[in-house]
Image (cartoon, rainbow, N blue to C red; front, top):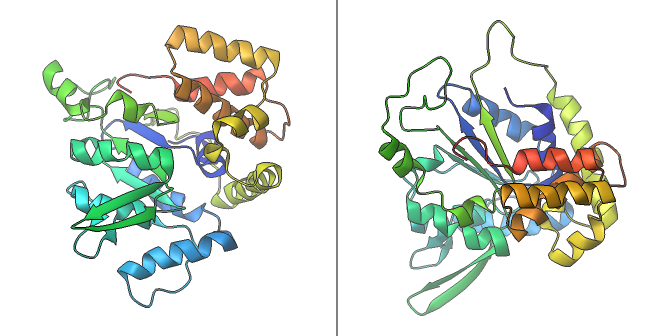
Length: 299
């Protein structure tokens, strides 16, 4: 079962997440809750979301709820990016200011996955087709879910994996290091033990209250989500305590984090501190951010 902390992080900070889970661990059952806990779009986001949706469906009304797009694994590069004779927007633009969820992400074409790197960094996509060019916004929160191997049993304590090492390597080869470097939260989901129960329950109503409170704090402090902070803003708003700085530097040396990964840890730690109502980023906040960032298992 997903932990409450991770759900709050996703909604407060708009971090990107990858889920590596056992087969039948319940990631798809979790998706309706993603829709329920999203808060309404801000007024200045309505026009952009509505304009993009109106290019695809004529007569589309004002979009009050952030979009949630879940393309099929057979989606083409043009379907994801956009294009065609009229340079129509693709899935990444239709998910602007919302969520792009790739279930069974390892089954998508390698070219589709690698295409995500640039819009994740810039928040927009430029299309050039037959002498025409169009620039569409594409600032989305990326969620990816995948089985740990083709049969889904790799790493399971109760089932036997039937895949060869070569097939597991090929299965994960589509996820290049530059793409994974842009993923802030990596989570492994195991099938819950019936004897231990499903974990601590929490309601959607409780989540929405915490999300609204943290989102308001971020808007008042910096006017945007933590995940959208640029390098200069990260230095300004994500200042670390000496203990937190030491924790991050130790993780960078021990886990060979890239500069992007280190910046990601700062922003995730800032979100955790916001959840705890703390103005300062403490060592405990940074340690938790590193735990979400570090590679576990195949990820």
